[in-house]
Amino acid sequence: MIGSWLQQQSVRVIISKRVQNRCFFAQCKSSLQCKRSIVASSSQAAHIRHQQQHTQQYRCYGSQLKVELDPNPEEVVATPAIEPYLRTCLRTSINADDNSNNQQRTSNNDNYKAIDMEFAITFLGTGGGSPTMHRNGSCTALRLGGQTYLFDVCEGTYRQLQFTRISPMSITKIFISHLHGDHLYGIVPVIMGIMVAHKVAMNDNSMSQKRKSRFYKPNNKRLAGAAYGGEDSVTMEKPTIEIYGPPGLYNYIGMVLSLSCSKMNHLNVKVIELVGGKEERGFGSSASSSSQRGRRNVFTSHYPEIQTPLVTRKFLEQNDDKTWIIDAPEPVTADSQVVGRDGFARLPNDTNLGTERRLHIKAAELDHLSGVQTFGYVVEEQPPPGTIDKDKAVALGVKPSKKYGLLKCGISVPNDDGTGEVHPSQVLCNVFRPRKFSLLADHRRVPPPMARLCTNSDVVVHEATLSKKDGVDRIKTRGHQNAFNAGRFAQMLGCKVLALNHFGGLAFGKSLMTDILSEARDGNRGASQIMAAYDFMEIGVPRGGFDFDKKESSDSQ
Image (cartoon, rainbow, N blue to C red):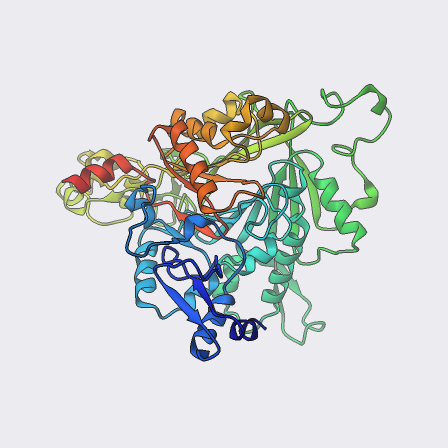
């Protein structure tokens, strides 16, 4: 279809070099030139096939920030300065890229993998309101090695996942900021897609038992041999996904599943609603009226008619500091030691190690619109274990042994001859600070509890729906922020990288996106690295987090 159209035209297909020749934004204008152009005509079948190959990767989600249009090829296009170190942490998360034989692309991928893939942010949707041909609705994924967290799920999110390296089976938690459709309508398709992926995997005999053990745990119950072919077989526990959000989330999910006659047979779904907030819509809240007394509240009441097997509901109360603690691993101390059969004290195997490590996850309210309870979320690592300087440890009387595991986690140990004690500060090197990710959904103001949680974030995702030209009154009435205030927020709280998202439907094109970035830089005053997120963009946070001051000083030396 496209090939026949190209045969009738003589066009120039513009392909961006900045995204390593991935054709996310193609423009057919014969008057424009670029750094790499392909002239397609009826006599150039090879170029047509080349264009068809790129068209297969063309998703219609583009931003002029990724495209370098050059009306005059002899002139160099000036681009906003971005920290070179940060550029190495950026990539586009697309499955098709893995099948490329391009030497330069492979080299860039290797450099990126060397950073650390245990903490990566993937933008599955960066638009606001409804999806457009340039951007999908709000969805951000945090990849943590073997598990993935999703933040907001607009319609079309599951389709976006098909283009990325994210496996649906790796999704273990979903966080919903508020119940507006552009942040919620994709939740049920994502749940069903995850369940189907697990169902296929459990019935896949070709999948190795080692790989299955990453997602499924054996059940203690044994199936009757007569009913299942003679020999006893160990059943596998159904995987579990946790969904966090405001009151009413469970009723929405249950209603859609019930009315669509959908059954959750292969997935446990736990819906945890954050209750006790200022904007909670329920009995006794400011948003409930006296006329509702005696009636069931659609947000907090229980409806037996929409109950769904394997979908449960829990409530998480607000703390005294106006935050919600979703997950908070206990600090590693000497009391964390477990005495083994050999009589030696060691740490539990799951202490901040491996892909199943626990994280500090907290939430706090945002001021979006009156009566619309909205949350922001913060994810922070446990302090990662340091590295032992073996020469120093041996000199202090501790040879390589299980004691090194205690020292890495900050616990003092006796030396081998028992004459003294060795402290972690004496032998540890390469001690990394924990990485922090913050996501602020739609809001017109960030209350102090949420601001405190975002302090010193490595990456903060902030909306930029409006422009500074719209004025303060527009912020109050629309319940959205502009890029200038986003930049100022990142500056005040010491955030290393500011990623703007939730752009309006008309926010595309080089000039407009440049204005948005300039506005954010004016508010930030050079305190943070700023970028405008686009669909499928991925930021890998290096081990120890971003430290641009240290990087600049080392480069100058």
